[in-house]
Length: 315
Ligand code: UDP
Image (cartoon, rainbow, N blue to C red; front, side):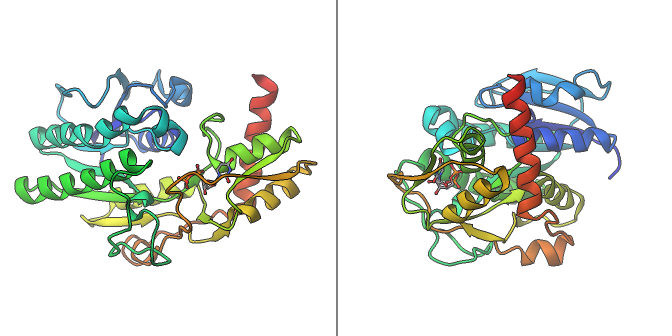
């Protein structure tokens, strides 16, 4: 890609910070806009002194004004874990709705390209598996995840409407479960929860009977997929994730094995609207972007375990 002026919202978050790193390394000028609600400047510490990097602390629910020319807008700002969006429900609703309109307004003003970080949650509790991009989903419109799911569905509608009405060149990435170093240790995600519990020989808390499935993508694979989409001439919707599906119980057993833990598995109640299965169909990304994930679950988990171990000993 030729060097561009890029604005990324949520660029200090988990996925956003890896993406920011890649974009700076690829020679772009980058402005991160972030309210630091769930992101952290710690994640982008190494970028702060780069001459091509700047950081604006700002909430996307408020109007965004950038003076210099903007070539590309990436909208990644949102709480993204069930615990974080439950703790910040209104901010999540606004980041996905008003925040998307504000970032689209920015793209319209600068005639920039646009990429929305959407989510597998737009498929809700899916009735088909694997989920391909044609599937419209099965979402509870006022359920406990709706501030996130429905805001992201609205965000997709906003992107489609703006791109049709104003000729904005826009893309949408539906990101499936992603894990790796830099995840927040206290945001309740299954991978970090289980590793944290296993390393301390505490009980591993499975919600429900553990038969629900997820498909976990290592963060570098996810970011490679997003960059491939950015670089492509595809102005469309793409699933990015790892189709390797496992049950939550199998994940717990694997983490116990990899950490040599004495933890016992305990079963807790399942939160409402917790999807029973999730597995991306990535054939579209494979054929049109030439992308597929490379890191297998065991290797990715080992890197994540090392990182959690390091955090536990240094904090
Ligand atoms: N989960 C669990 N124990 C935990 C945390 C999560 O059994 O300590 C389950 C959760 O109910 C869900 C799956 O693991 O079925 C993935 O949860 P996560 O919060 O990571 O993200 P989700 O994929 O639901 O958005």
